[in-house]
Image 1: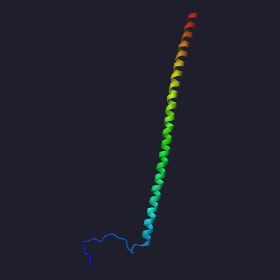
Image 2: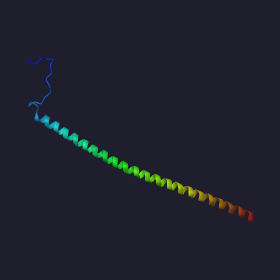
Image 3: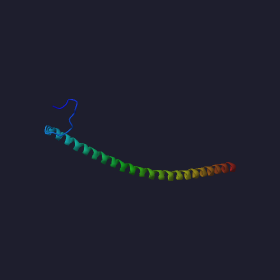
Image 4: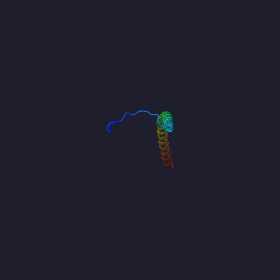
Length: 95
């Protein structure tokens, strides 16, 4: 008779039901499938993130170009205003 305070080491036994083994194997397969799916999702998100970062860089370049063009337009409008004011002043003098 074994001593009550001494524990037996863990081991497989023929007394383990087949259903328990099937459930354990099924869970292992499902966990492996979940991990594979999760990995694919993460890789897909990483690829989309890289593509989005490239688009952002392109947009930044375009925004800088548009800012330069807007500055030129504003300078052109200022010159047109000055010319219009000169015309108005010369028209008022000629009256």
